Amino acid sequence: MCGIVGYLGNKNASEVILNGLSKLEYRGYDSAGIAVNTGSCLDIRKKSGRLAILADDVTKIKMDGTLGIGHTRWATHGEPTDVNAHPHFSENKEIAIVHNGIIENYLELKEELTHKYGVKFLTQTDSEVVAHLVDKFYKEEKDLLEAVKNTVKKLRGAFALLIIAKDRPDEIVAVRQDSPLVAGVAEGEVVFASDVSAILEYTRDIFYLDNGEIFYSKAGKNQIFDFDGNKIDKESVYVDLSLEAASKGGYDYFMEKEIYEQPRVIAETIERRLDENGDIKLDNIYISKEDLDNINKIYIIACGTAYHAGLLGKYAIEKLVKVPVIADIASEFRYSDPMIDKNTLVILVSQSGETADTLSVLREAEQKGARVLSITNVVGSSIARESHDVFYTWAGPEISVASTKAYTTQIVSLYMIALDFAIKKGTITKEYYRDMIDKLRGVSKKVEKVLDKKDEYREIAKKFIKSQSAFYIGRGVDSGLAMEGALKLKEISYVHAEAFSAGELKHGPIALLEEGTPVIAIATQSKLFEKMVSNIQEVKARGAYVVAIAQEGNDLVSKTANDVIFVPQEDDLIVPILAVVPMQLIAFYVSVLRGLDVDKPRNLAKSVTVE
Ligand code: G6P
Image (cartoon, rainbow, N blue to C red; front, side, top):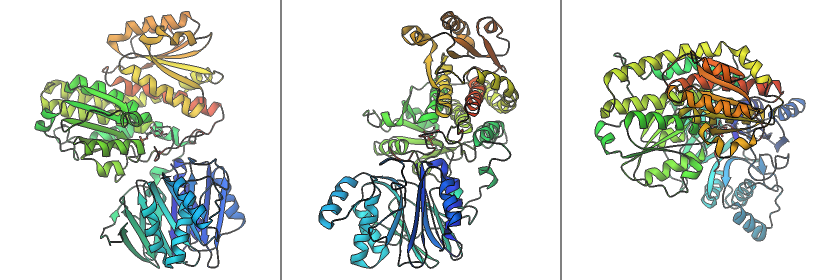
């Protein structure tokens, strides 16, 4: 949710910033802006629309200067117009700021600035107050760092900020409170960004800022302070991440590339957690058998696709570990007065590790004494750092807004945790444990086979492109999977898609079916297969066009459905990892065939750092 980049050094700042912003566009892409200190003024350019429009402007009229800040926006307060785009600046254009997060008390501050100081606001954003506050203190203090310290004391909410001043061509101040911010340092240079991908090209020495920290850089010298002005000693971390991982690698779209990476990243997620005997070893999870015996309830909390992975995790943990599991979405869970205590384990699932709702759950759960285990894809993310135990998915950077490889690796991670807990608790036999590990290890090869049939999925996608609505149905774990299938289709192809538990159809949703409505019927569960076939017949009888997904060998379904996608035979718990892949590719092809922006769907953002 909004990406920010800042630079101070010896290079052309606008070039570094635009390059950095291009790596952060997944965080928001409705407008973008940049401010550069030219030595005589702050040159500020802001454009609604994609970053390319801003880049075009900067190419035509160069921005000269080695200090600057930039922003790519996902609008919260105020429409995505040129004016509302960041950077925001003070009335005299002496101060410019970029902000990621939400200033919750901005109305109160705006009121004060307007009435007490006669400030005239230009934008509808919450962020603009920051520029005026810094300006007000800067006029009093004549010290940029002090002005920022005074400003942050007045702010409530979430804010990652970068601040520069017209008459300070070699100073930049960065602040982090509940929104991500990292600083990369090299000889005589500092690059700030919302995530490391925007920095790695310049340096790999990274400072991960914590909440309540101010990073101040002046002429190649860096210092970190808390909000009270106390100095903080902190070491940089060397980040060893491949740059290539964040490029399209020959594919036309990140989503396509990420779908095709699944065999590899699933294998990585599994193999890195196996010891020399092939047993699961969870490096950053310190939950003993005794701890497990004391846990009487597990919550799995997440948002979006990660929540859908959690739904499958619930099945696995209840089945194997025999502990009740409640899966819920973070934004609801937090305000539901959940019954959490020291005997509760809260498992958070988050690709980015920065989702604001999920992060809030983490803090509340820890405050209530629960143990928090997080499954995340981003090393050093806020959720990873604040959790007691962490399981890293090895999916690599996921750039496309629609999540694919993160989802399948999250499922695998949840299954490994379930197996580890179950063997420790003695709720499964050693034979079953070994058998399931072998099956998990074999899943990558089977995903490859599923991916081989892309032409088949493309043909099926053609049947969806003119549809207004589509439905996804399933039973058992397949009903959780149906939710993910529907989400993929709606988020990137804008076809109204809904998921239903197949058994629930007759209680209302079946009334929505019309002649030719596409229904994806997921029928991978052996025990529930016949019941699904009956449900397929019910929807078919009402005119639906049914695409079934079933395990090879279940030929009966061919007699009922219009199209069948067969996936290799697999254990009922594991087969959803195979069955989701055709749904990802169908959604992808529908989006491509409709001529939409697959990787950056309208109104969405990859990392949602506001509540
Ligand atoms: C956004 C993204 C989704 C993602 C969800 C949760 O809505 O568009 O793809 O599933 O956030 O994100 P997280 O990083 O916590 O997994």
